[in-house]
Amino acid sequence: MALDVLIFRAEIAVALVMLLSGAVAAWASANVAKRIVGLLIAHLGAVLALAALGLPDAVLIAGTGVALAHLIIGAALLVRLQEAYGGVEAREFDAADEQTEPTEPTP
Amino acid sequence: MIAEGLELARINSPLLLVTGPLVGAALAAAIPNARASWAIAAIAAILAAVLAFDLGWRGLFTAGSTGVSRHDGAGLFVVPLLAGGGALVTLALGALSKDVSERAAPFAHALVLVVIAGWCGALLARDLFSMFLAVETAWLAGVGLAAVNAERDRAALSGALRMLIAGGVGAALLLLGVGFVANGVGEVRLLAFAETRIAAPELTSIGVGLILLGLAIKAGAAPFHFWVGSAFGRTGAALVLGALAALGAVAVMVRVAGFAFAAPDLGAGVAAVLTVVGAASVVIGSLHASGARNLKRLAAYAGVAQIGCILLSAALGSPAGLAAALVQMFAMLAAALALFGGGAAIGGVALPSLDGLGRRAPLASVAISVAALSLMGAPLTVGFLGRWRMIEAGVGVGWWWAACAVVAASLAGVFYAGRLIDRLYFRKSSAPYVGEGGGWRWLFAPMLVVAILAILLGLEPAWLLTAADAAAARMMGLAP
Image (cartoon, rainbow over all chains, first blue to last red; front, side, top):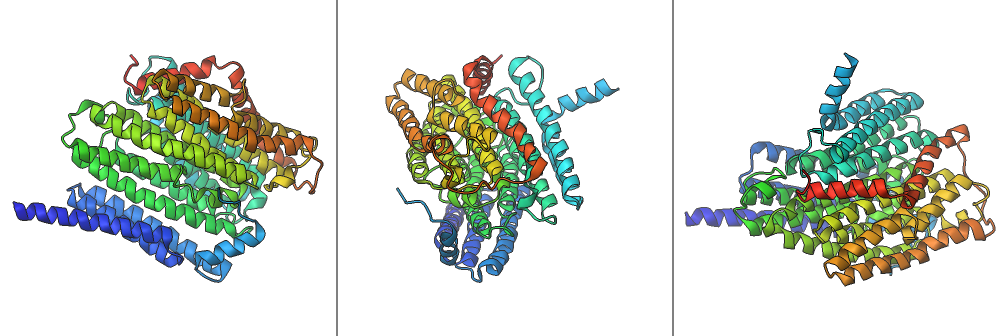
């Protein structure tokens, strides 16, 4: 019984760590590919948490489907960004965009 | 026979509001000709709007059955706004064919319909998991729309990426929150908050908090608004629909909060989340809008401030507070349609391009001016009405600080929205008028006229207030 509880808590902890680290990578990384991978990790963390909580398989499959949809759209955007800007670094995009429109001052 | 068919459609209108636009989207995407695709999309969107208004009318003003849960006031009030706004935007898309290539136009029209179907589905879903799927469907279609004019301006791709990343993280939080609620309550029906004894209130509170957080990111509420400027500021005029997405997300937040307020264990936590996000949005949105140099960014950040006012009103957790939140949603949509629509009709987005346009583009200028007055909360506009109701509700429960925050938002609005009126009517032109599109440009007219009339509903607000009060009463379980 105690082992079950321990395993459950470990699964939830791993899921939360995946979700949080993925979210931080998705938000903070300069490289678009890393951002998209971070997003995938965050989604898989959420799906893992659902599995640990014992939700039905249909929910897990649909959650995974949503994660894959984000991955596919993200990959498509990655390719288009590479074609349009010649790179995949977010700073390059910002620098290029600022040339055509100055950003507003940060309050 | 026809009467029976219509009655069947009315009974199943919640289902048709989702499936109708999706079928229209499939048809619009399958037709390669841009104009024919637009016509199909416009017909589907108008039919959805008619169904939505019928559903809202029956739900809020008559005792007839709607197929919608008795607590679902937010859905009944906001779905007609979303579907009606979506129909006006879809009509206006006919004037924006220059923004997208002939090849991409059918997909843009289809994506607009998917956005409408998704947000309507999220507002009518009976359980949290269906709501999650509907929100994600709408969101991913919105990302596609944000990127659709990348051939004209590559910055649209950067905005779409930020939207995808922000919304993706929000989706992960939303999914985790649904899982926590399912585990804590034992089921995912929204009505379970009111009808079931919650076995694990702490876990459920965390779950509802995560759901609200995920939706706050999608609504662009502060401090999660970092994607708003890029997504709305550099994408094509087709992203007038972005206003509908923000409205949809904040309405789903208010809807979930309305259901959660029915459970005594959850009310305090929900109010705390809404208060913090709402107050931050009012302050940060107003500051960013004051510094904006681009009409779309200004409208987007003003929307963030308005979202803050909506969330503060909803945080009160009273019928008066929820009614004030619904009135402000109406005001937000009307102002957003007028600002985005006016900007798109004019063709320029940099603030200097508005100089002296009052005489050369009178309808668009009037729309932008009336929206600016509503953002300020000027008397006789619907913006004033929403804020006045919020102040009444806030003071009624001793939330003086929230009332002061709303007054501060209005004062900030005088600064940033006043600049628009100054430029339109009190400055000489410094840039050539770039509005174009020939006769098709008149397709903006319905959206602008409706937005102006909606804002001026502040002159005769009885109908709007009655609908908002009826919806709030349903949300609190006070309706018969």
